[in-house]
Image (cartoon, rainbow, N blue to C red):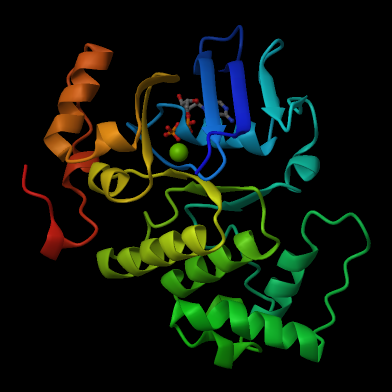
Length: 280
Ligand SMILES: Nc1ncnc2c1ncn2[C@@H]1O[C@H](COP(=O)(O)OP(=O)(O)O)[C@@H](O)[C@H]1O
Ligand SMILES: [Mg+2]
């Protein structure tokens, strides 16, 4: 991949509850340059600012005054979430967030096609669309292509996240944001959804940022790894620097960069696939 920049964050800050006793600096002077084709994994303890980072990129709320979000040379920091949606696909932690339970698989996919387009929503399921949906679902290997008229609420969590993934990538967004999207799944299903994620990202040559609660996963997937702590990016490893690292190397890197003990055991202990669990 070339080093062409897709997205740049410059001096991005986010403060919640400013001026109250609950004031928290969720993002603290974030500078980040995402290159086209990057698949970035992001790790950090609870409250580190990972979700806030994705929300800022997705335009859920703007950064504090002065922070810039540059896409294609243009500062989009103050554009609405809807305008950001034209170049962003997103999958959330909760399978219920990305899909509509009371609509069928086909209807959900129709909505996904229309996403980011400003014209009136046309969810008519034409023959041509059905074919398109089948083609998108077959590679999942979950046989959802035979269940186009099933209500999404009847799917399992894993099937629903796989569908969310297809929906998020259907309109070929420039950037895919994944926020602990396998955290609620059992280890085996999580592994399947993660492998699907990797397959879609590489097939569509997408740029992606994937937040995970698991260091092993952060090392296994992607080509670049960020570690966040107290609203800052404290470790940023490229492909060469990541190669051959173990979870315990990462813990060392965290402790060196933060000057603190790594306290969040769940990040170390939760394993996606016990059979291949890395020995520390
Ligand atoms: N909408 C909000 N209102 C107030 N505080 C928030 C809000 N969103 C996040 N925070 C706070 O900002 C910090 C970072 O949160 P978050 O980005 O969700 O962390 P992470 O995803 O890394 O666990 C936390 O202290 C959290 O409590
Ligand atoms: Mg979060």
